[in-house]
Structures are given as structure tokens and as C-alpha cells.
Amino acid sequence: MSLTKLPSGRWRARVWHRGADVPVGPVLGLRKGTTWRTKSEAKAARERARAILKGNQPGETTVGQWWERWTTDPLFARPKESTNVHNKERTGAFAKRYGGVPLHQVGNFIVGEWLAGGNRNSTVQALATMFNDAMSAKQVGSSTTTRSGGSDCTRQRATRTVGLRTRNKWRRWS
Image 1 (cartoon, rainbow, N blue to C red):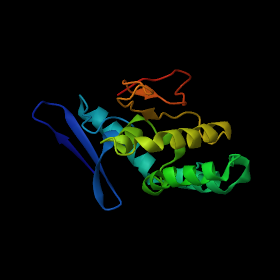
Image 2 (tube, one colour):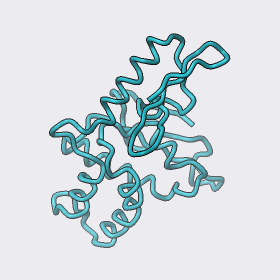
Image 3 (spheres, helix red, strand yellow):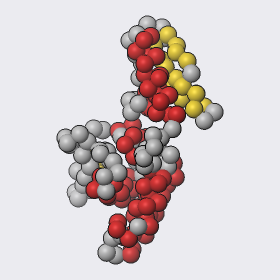
Image 4 (cartoon, rainbow, N blue to C red):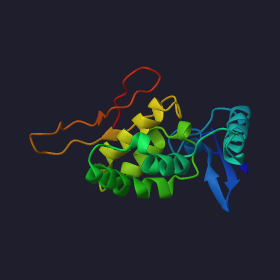
């Protein structure tokens, strides 16, 4: 839990969480190297991050809780059993890694971190389906998921948003 003044004159904020020194930016949904102009801005950001990391507010559904419900509740079952098996396999690793994160905190940073390196692009459609169902069930107000296009003619080359809205606007980011 520290504030550090950088040689540039800006401030870096970090918090202690689960035995690790964590940068504040990603906790707040900002990029990893985020810094603040003043010490008071950094302190305020640190306090917001502490509040988020302190624990979920009562009634908040986590990724793990939602995934468990989504994969077992007949309400969200797809017509073909093979699709249900496929969705469970494709989303299981994401739910395991981010299981403790409240659904409403899943945003650009977490999705970008998950898709980094391009090895998990095949999970995007199943994750989009999972988060769309969460939005339909009023478990989360908004979320973003992206898909990187490949080189074949059936995909776009540019990164595009897949199926999820954020604050009623379609987002495009790479």
C-alpha cells in the first residue's frame, strides 16, 4: 500500500492484496502503467482500489458464481447438449482465473489480459454468450469482449467487439 513519486513527477499507487503488491490501475479498469498527476489523485485512486479489493458488496455476483449457475441452470441451456459442453469447456478456464471478480468489474483490462498473446481467441464466442446471458438475467449491466480477426476470408482483420455493449455504445478497441 504505497504511493511512489516517479522521476517524471507523476505518482504511482499500489495496494497490498492477497499477499501481493498490486498496481491500482488494473483494479480500477485502467491500463497497468497508469500514473496520477498529483499525490491526492493517487491517494484517491488507491482508496477506490482498496474498496474494490476489500470484497464484493452484498448481492454482487462474481464470475465464478455466475459461471456455475450459467453452466448448470436449465434456463441457460442451449438446444444441443454439445453446445452446452462446448461452452462449459471454453469458459471454464476464464471462470477459474477470474472467479472472484464481480461481473460488473469485467471490462477492457481483464478481457485484454485474457486474450493477450492470441492463444485464447477461440473462447471469445462462448464468453460473449456467457456475458450476454448475464446481461439478460440482470446480473450485470455491461461488459465488453473482443475478438481478434484472423487472416482467412471469413474473419475481419481488425479487432472488433463481439455481441456485448458497454454503456449503450458499441466499443472498438485493440
